[in-house]
Image 1 (cartoon, rainbow, N blue to C red):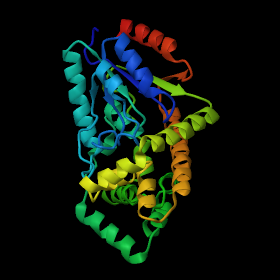
Image 2 (image 1 turned 120 degrees about the vertical axis):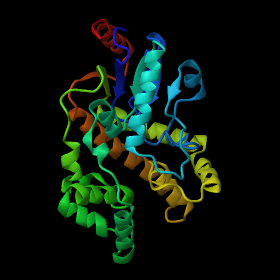
Image 3 (image 1 turned 90 degrees about the horizontal axis):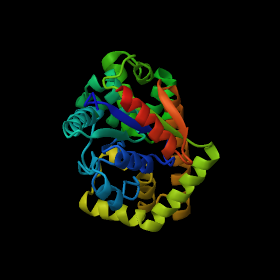
Image 4 (image 1 turned 90 degrees about the vertical axis):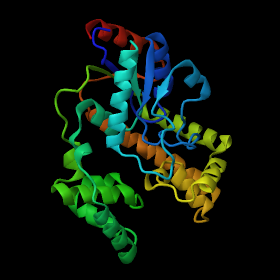
Length: 309
């Protein structure tokens, strides 16, 4: 490569085949994979996050998997710092960095130096908002957010208190809504980057999601959550809201039965995939290819792009 910080990114909604394509491209182009999954950073959260298995990790070097315990918060700013370090190290080895994942905020922050990552936090304000929700009743903060930032309120579940508080915090600190921050995208990326987006018809994505959720429960998702709670009685707000984990936590807590837990994981994951696709559809410069048999088209895109990088 002429530029040692050239970067390939494989993006798209959950269940579309990003992990498999990323490994295939890494094997074809002497690449190493950087995970852009906000939940795969947590140790012990393997089944529910559908992390790359031991076979994939033995074939290709992976970065930013299993780097923090699930009782600790992990920020987008930390991701940006670690990912940029990994990109530099991979380039120094003469290998191709391949970013793979569906956490759109992570990807945008890394590629475009997204300004929201620079907005700090105010622990006292967060604590006050938490106390207000506890004092005034569930849904209080979500209703306030709906007045200030209707689009974020529509995107966030009323029980997702951590992200609701963050949206209110950002507005309080900056005077700008989370939606307005998200819509700010610098025109030029930090790295020369080829963005490959995978898509499938919605019904195919939903079918894959349902099959994957069934497999996760068969593989022991409930047992994994039980074991996590033994080691980490208080999961971080982020980890406890991960898809699959928050529903199983409700099941283990006795508020829902198993059938409802399974139904909610499938429904919530489908809704998440829809939001992911809507986000990525707005991103400029993505080369979209069908996720049914993407390898050949993706390789051709990479070959052509590397010749020009």
